[in-house]
Length: 240
Image (cartoon, rainbow, N blue to C red; front, top):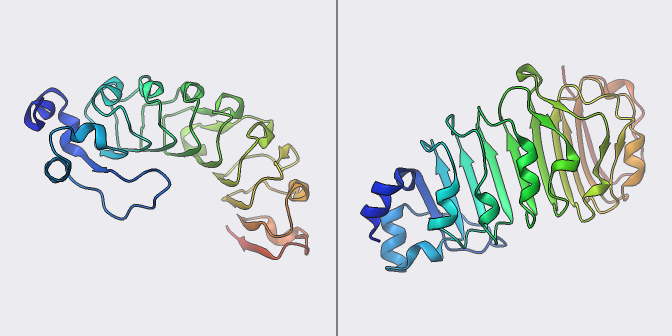
């Protein structure tokens, strides 16, 4: 199928950019469809390892695995019609997923079907979305979530991140994640970023971490708390 035929059948390809780099390689440049086709030839869809799609018009994502079966890294940005990410589980090599501005997708439990996912970023999803850790892939190495309280989103009360046995990087932005007393972290974490936490009053969860862990804490109550001095790379930023 030619590029024009693919675009006619799947118009969102025209809003996508591509890279043939493996997920482990930091990519500066993504190519538009025609440029990628010229570079990689007739079988170019099979060469796509990274894909970024902006302003999706499709209601579902099933077509992505049909056209680009070897995708390892995916960015979905601005997709008001998407209410389900079903179909992504068919991407056998998908390791990294960034979801930004999927305003009508709230079924985060669909993430548990992505068995090989190592990196996950969620920023601005649907109203009343519940961030339940046990429904996230246990294979995660890096997790970055932004919980929007103004949209009725919430974290579950139990915040035991040890279910991710290999987790190394954790970033949480939330204005209401409790006092911190329910947070349990795996010793594998080497980078921790906690932002916009107005209710954080208990820092005992830091006891799980190594002295060399990179830590950034940003919240309105932090100036009142005693920060452990043993950490070599910790930054505390009061935030109103």
